[in-house]
Length: 209
Image (cartoon, rainbow, N blue to C red; front, side, top):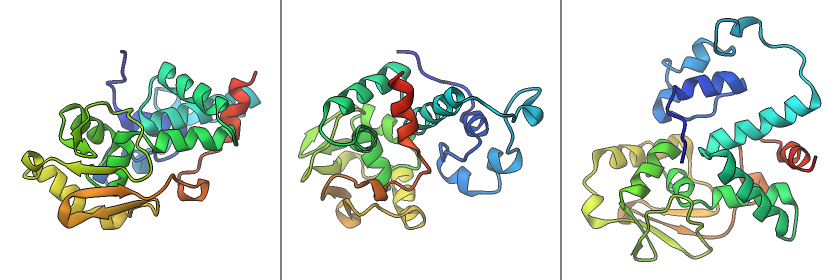
């Protein structure tokens, strides 16, 4: 599957919003978006102009897709699944994205970014309900226990991430047991739990054309 391997700081600049794709660096004065908050490329500084309704919808979809690190095909499949569910399609979509295992590990504070969390999952550092899971898109359910494997507890980067979790905070729908290196899913995230400035209705409108 194709994946983006370029500079992720360019993605923030392209979407004109800080997406927090590089963990601690995004909170420091080294953040490329803070230093150059204009679009990348030779003409980036004069590229901000009026865009069409379609362009606004497309940029919103691209922004959310980049926040969660998904390919176009993966994102479309999540949208179609959300559309089949009862309730508001946009809210369903965001709930599915938040329930991904790599996102849950990031939200619990075991990783500085979703990219790092995805790598941890692929390397089988985490278990769900006592079983090893190496699928980043695995959807967690209410009551699931996400736990760091005993053999992986000496990884310095994970310890450093947990020490810094106070700055980012743990959402209310998750319960972090820091001493036990595990987290419990108390419920599914409500719309108000998602603090990123996302207008999911624009995505629904885009895919409804």
